[in-house]
Each structure stands twice: as C-alpha cells, then as structure tokens.
Image 1: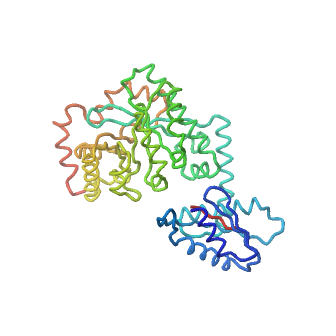
Image 2: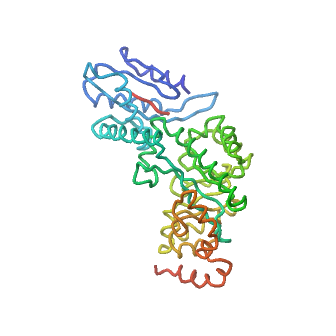
Image 3: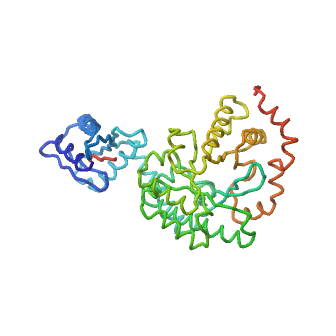
Length: 405
C-alpha cells in the first residue's frame, strides 16, 4: 500500500515538487510556486482522486481514503517545523470532518492552535503537580440491587474543579502524545485502588473495574501482555477487569487490534462495546467481534420514559444482545421511571446519577458498605411485586493521513 501510494504521488507531481514519506502512513508533499490557495486545493483534490482508486495488493483490490492538510507561507522566516505542524492540524481537521478530503490551515485553526497550546500546558502542569485523579462510578446489578463493578473515570482538578476531562482536552492529550502516559497512569492507579478496596472490603464486593482503551493501544502487539503485567503488579488478574471500546475505535482498528481483544478475553478480561447505537452500529460487530457486553448510550436511556420509539429501540437492543449471549449495561440512568423500564426490558447492569455520581475511593467504600441503600433505590427483592404497577404507568404512551505543506 505504501509503495503504491508513493508511486501515485510521484506520478501526479510536478518536476519541482518534493515528496517524502514522513512516517507510518503519512506523506509530505512540498509544493513551490503556486500563486493561490485555490491552486493548492486543486492539487489536493487531484491527490484525493488518485488515491481513491483501488490499489492492487497481493492480487486483491484494496480501497483506501486519504486525509490532507494544507499549510502555506510566503514568509522566508516561517520555520519548516511550524509549517509541518500547521499542515498536521489541518490534516486532523480533515479526519474529524469525515476523511477522504482536504482542509486548509487558516484563522480558525490558528485559534485552535493557540487553544491547544494552553490546554497542553494545563495537562502537563496537572501531570507534574499531581492534579490528576481517578474517580469511580458504581455499576449496579439491576436484579440484585448491588454494585458489582465500577467504571474508572479520569479527573483533573485543574479543569472545572475536578469534573470529567472535557473531550477537547482528551483530543489534545492524544495529539500531543500525552494520552498514552495519562492512560497508563490512570489504569495503574485504578488497579491499585481496587486491590486496596478489596483488602478492606473483601473480594466479593466489587467484581471488576471498567476502563476505556484506545485504538492506538489495541493495535500494539504487546498491549495484552503489558496490561496483564500491570494487573499482576497490583495483585489482580484478567477477571478483575472490563475494557470498553467505542464503535469509532473499532472502525479504526485492524486485525491486530482484534487479536489483542481475543488475547485479553483469553486471560479473563471482559470486553464491551461502549456507546452502542451512537455510531455506525452494525450487527456484524455484535456477531463477529470478541465481545462480552454492550453499553447502551445515555442518549437512548434519557428518552425512554417519554418516547415510544426510544423504548422500542432500547428493548430491541437488549433482546438482540441477549440472543447473542451478550450482557447489557445501560448508562446515564437518572430517574426511577428509566430504571423500572430497563428492568422490565431485562437489562442486566446500569449506572448513572440515580445511584451515584463519580466517587473518590473512600466514597466508593462508603457506597459499597451501604449496599442496602442502593438496593432500596433499585427496588430490592420485592420489586416484582411493587414495581410492576409503577412500570405499567411508566410506559403509558402519554408521555491513512496525508499532509501537504
């Protein structure tokens, strides 16, 4: 693929153009002498068209798309590294906007670059000053009424007084190379805290910790062994962990990532599909991928009490998952009506503000020790006798990247 791509870039280049492989699946084309951005855009469009045609690899046709970022300058003092960084930002903008296109670095991206520098500085200071922490949101067995898992959530006291890490911050952490370091620290901290919780509460109080993993981690061949070693360091094993991957992550992954998921399941790790229904949901994913559970996005859960279509979708997702022998977790449960509906649909687990917000380790201990209180929220053993009437009223229908510098 790289050779085929390089040949196509060369065939479309002018004699004075410089083409190089920048690393991985990224190429740089240095174009001189063009008089306008329109000329640069036309050049980029020709590259997109040329690379869109199927490549013949090993006797098979392989189709790939290209994301192009354009940065231009007429200043002799414009540093090459700055020009490449600008093209890189424009390329990521092209990816964010759907790929198979080009974007030009301009004022909007310039403002984004300034914001990015501020965010990166905040993150680096937070890491060095110990302002990162891990909080836990309990995941409740909706039948038994007790917390059986907890999702580990990254928090930063330098941002919004310790609230969840905003998406732009995570994006900057990823682009700047900080995210792998932060993820590794967060997981190691969560594992150590789970081991500490068990030493004071006992093994049966919390079965697993749930964490998220990225596409970059999954494609690394040593990720399963590295994760297993991190668990062992904390005195844990694979059965103590759930990992959640989003549909977007799975769409970006390769066979090596699927192998990683299989290896993780082999050591007892539970694998789940997060935010199900918000991306390019496919029955192929549920049938072919090595999954143990799916997590229904909070957007669906939020609407089930007042919208019949949402109720039908959620009920169908739960039935489908169970038919495929997959567990179901509903996130974002905030009201008793939502809870009763989900229980009526047979949903296995749930989390949300109805039970608890994100908790410190000591707060999680308090929550687990007060298990009876959470049981009252869920409904306890007598829910089947008392909750059916409430449930009936609740469901009444009234309510490959390329840069061009």
